[in-house]
Amino acid sequence: MRKAIEAEYLADAGVLKLAHPLEGVRDHERVTVVVEQTSHTEANAWPTLDEEAGRELARAVRDAFGRDGIEV
Image (tube, rainbow, N blue to C red; front, side, top):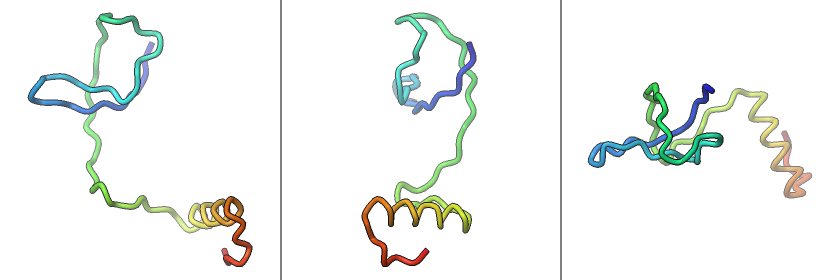
């Protein structure tokens, strides 16, 4: 099995803290891990959307909250 997962490295403890349990892996089972560092963004940073994705998001918000007066 090969699966990409999200984890946080806790240097003081020397462990990787997984964001979610590994389905199909037994407790204490040994696995091979490949580490690929992801870029860090500020906690308050908003993701950037292209123009069409922004319109789709605006439509979804308008539809979900009944704001027909919002122009997209």
